[in-house]
Length: 113
Length: 115
Image (tube, rainbow over all chains, first blue to last red):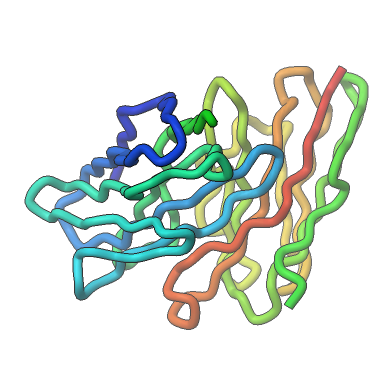
């Protein structure tokens, strides 16, 4: 079964700092990869997704992620974070033939002014 | 589209009582998922349905939990009897294979507190 690891549990950054959140998965076959964001008190919202094609995926609000197949990674990046990016970020994966999503444990991002 | 609708948004109950959570998926979606989110365990998939049929219920914690999907537009998650350790936020999500390329859309969640 696939699994997802998010090694950064809690990240604190100042506004305008650059962000990179790690995500690694374990599955040898075709995968679909997702990043979801959960703002305080709200539900999960899709930030971006990768299915095929260009491994550099651009999402909403200036976020992007790069799929590196050889490293089984799908790290999330943003060049300059804002206070409003304070949220919890979840990486998720499913295989090409199943609808079941496996989520990582999440990374709590706190952006200070 | 109104998105995934869940009710109630908040539920406070006493230990031993029956709790029923409700979900209306996005129209046309053929997959429905129930998740539980706690500080200790993060986001856990409890069960999911395809075309109203339960496909994988391996995440359901115990027999006190049951889920049904009587039709394409409605699902329930029931806890009977409830216990304090069931306190969590319960999310419902839906998706449509092919049409949305497996993207799951989440509802606002039901925050359950069992006293």
